[in-house]
Image (tube, rainbow, N blue to C red; front, side, top):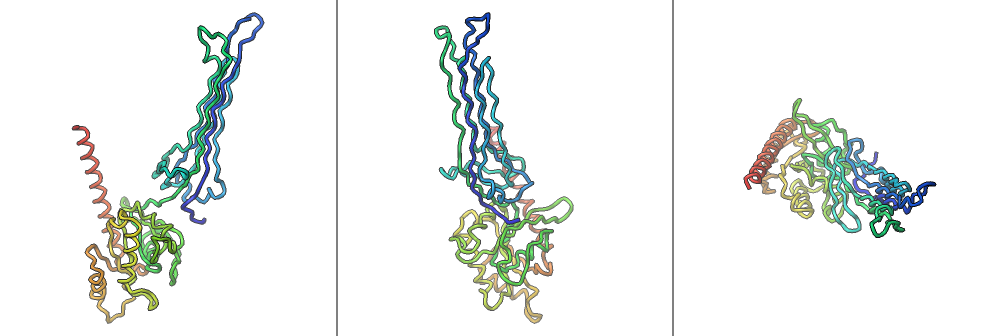
Length: 355
């Protein structure tokens, strides 16, 4: 299935039903009085997150979603039937924006999350409602209000704990294949990854995390070059970035240091939040070093030239060398971060209670 992470849809809530002007007319009740009933409320439109879908591709073919109109009121004080709400399913991670106002309406980050995007119209009132001591036979009723109509911009952001960042052919797909059951396309030429891939890494029976592989970033990605602009946003919700660098690129490609600096520059241009996320340097393809080359010295030279002061790992994704240690260290990092978040939430809750 083609991966689609943006879509535009139109949602139309149902109008409220009109109130009824009616009078009771029976053979032996000459002055029955008003008996017009209220209309029914219009149906609303909701978005609901479900794990049955993982892209927004269906909205390319079904872009208009209308809820049912409320039924008009009837005589004998009968209220019109309410219009049925409709529930439009989207994948978890969908961000919803009103395209006309640029107002962010909400996010659906977990399965079964629900968001009201178009409110149904309110019902009109029948003439029974307008009866009073000085107006025993009102000849008026109100119309139902209009339901909301909106054009929505839907954007899907993958929900992953760890994001892979690197130039094309850095080995991101090979790594995700080595550590998870995901099987993205792998080849010995750049741009084999054209859509994001998610993989679940299980370090043991009860400890796992989700890793995301996005298409390779190239110079100018933050301005829209290549696929970077389209997919860099998928790293926004990750807790850790793994910056993969090919330590033995082809002669026609940039050096490891030049490649790493270009990626860092693009991330900083994209957003400060992304640039400030924890980031580990992963020196990949150590298996391609010659036997007489000192691996430690070769990799240290790259680290020194970059001026990198964060965690550094040396791996071969293709041969799964060093990947197990890396995955365990990531799991430990994520668990420590989760514990800190829980302690912070608990502290804030205690402060609120004391106030």
